Image (cartoon, rainbow, N blue to C red; front, side, top):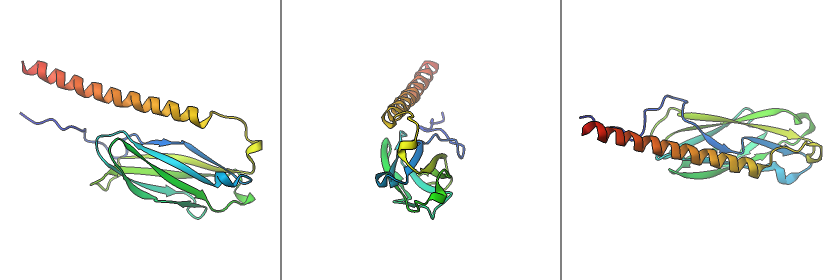
Length: 164
């Protein structure tokens, strides 16, 4: 009888990547906003390695642009806007977070995070509060982990029933 693998074979690029926030907004008149943190979550049973890429690398400094995330842990990635000039107002840049298994080279998943520099926070329309977005993301993550555990346990139950 064949032994069942604990984790499915993943197609390159198909692994969901969980990052918060999903968008970065920098404000020229607010120096505290020039440094922001992306949190990369790993809800999986295996370690991930990650790489952060950017469409405008000269405008940003990424602390620890490559690294690893232990199973069911998270890491913070610090991003600093280094070129706060009026000519960059409203320009949308992109960060891509690519993840792969610790021992693999191919990217199993990726997530893009948009980054925008605005002149002033006072001109910005109120949007969803970051705490509310983080709470919703954590709920979705918990639901996904529960679903995966339930599906795995159901699969084991089905195997036991078929054996008897």
